[in-house]
Image (tube, rainbow over the protein chains, first blue to last red):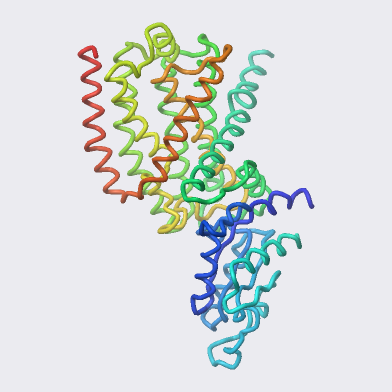
Length: 137
Length: 311
């Protein structure tokens, strides 16, 4: 089992899914790919199709419209795969908790492996979160 | 017994699958590392492409509900077989001058289209609009680059007067490389541009434009079939420059210091491809076809005429 997961730890490809976020976490997420942080050092690549992904990075406070999309994306991700919640909204719905169109944090619907709080979390925090998620494998 | 075991060994282990895939994956690491350095990044470690492929082999394979599963799953294998056969034939002639057969150059040119054909089949079979779009773009791109590429290769054939690979290699051994002639230089430049399209690197990576159509034909692939697709692309990164060096630049020889010179030739061609990839924007498909059928074909025909006159 560990041998099977060894290459996975060395090349986690991430798919970025926004479920109604204010775009701040998404911008910070893209910062990780810039020359300053360069996550390709660890083999992390941003892929365009969820079928290529090993980790689903979810941002945003999960609106009612996004629930079926989130479930579908989770089912389309080939296993073994991780789900990482990025930002306060994705972790706990934060200040949007009582809003009429928000159905709750994403761990109500899909199993979340790692929570990265922050509004928005720093790129360093995201890299550290992904490393911790890979350590769980 | 020997008639079965030796060809299988050639095909699977030495000049064929295993050798080509290992060197091809290392080449794709060079590609990523040089790209990273050009963008002022650090870049991935050397084992990165190996980790990618082994990871994909270990992952779940999802076959979407729509497509016909057999066609969808065999398409990557067609491309892999094509590129492996090309590599085997080219290396057999390079290593041992008697290893060719009549018309092997034409067979190689045909087999070179198999990886692109596999991408078209896979993309259309995936029943995804973006996949179909990528497949149609790949089709137009083949129409675009195949014409100047064939003209460039047949410039050499006209110059030498033979479609045998070993004749081309031995001619260059005794009379100097094709790059000494003006027609050879023109044909080589055209072939480099077409090779960029053949390897679907950046000015011509229109079929799998990551930012606009999300990897195009590969979009529905996951797990092992995706690994095979990635491996095919990595092997193309090795096979296409090897083919160009064999036709235009005197081929490979492995006695004494020539080993170093052979490796240097290959790495030089690879780095040229990577630098073209990093310093150009992606073309639109109509611009690409207009470019390949317009200036590139005209220049290729000029080279051919020069070869006929005797330059």
